[in-house]
Length: 61
Image 1 (cartoon, rainbow, N blue to C red):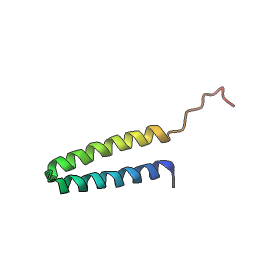
Image 2: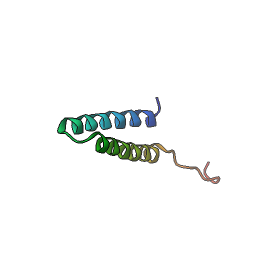
Image 3: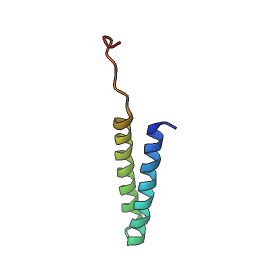
């Protein structure tokens, strides 16, 4: 598995735990879904920036 896949699995598990906690706390399903989507977007953006390989310039050997 790639590092990005492992990172995204961790993000999804974290979002699931937070969504479960929000539902137990009595938050509405709408706000729980909004929070989950925001966290998923942030997780995808973070995983891309953390696992991207640096570009090599043509002069590097």
